[in-house]
Length: 141
Image (cartoon, rainbow, N blue to C red; front, side, top):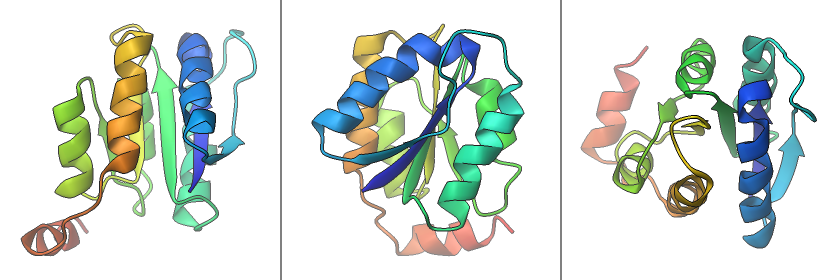
């Protein structure tokens, strides 16, 4: 699977850990930045990741900032994106199975690297169950 990955300065260290998981699992990664802990405007990174998911260049995206809140808000401005802020594995699994989330948001200051790596693994392995959930997703627009 091709995954777009991006973070702001607050999420830089966690992005590096998540990048390792993506490579370990054999995924191709479009790294949309940042490449250092220098301050940036996170909506620009969110837009870059989400445009890759929305246009089909990547099947999924992962965004990381300090809390994950700003990235999730910015990501969900794109009508083709269903971004889920996940701080534990059950929510990550349900975001895929019931909501067909195509972007995962993580908070670097609220989620340690070990848990973030496990959330990433669970989220990437999750499949959308369709059925009644598809009907509900269509109501989003």
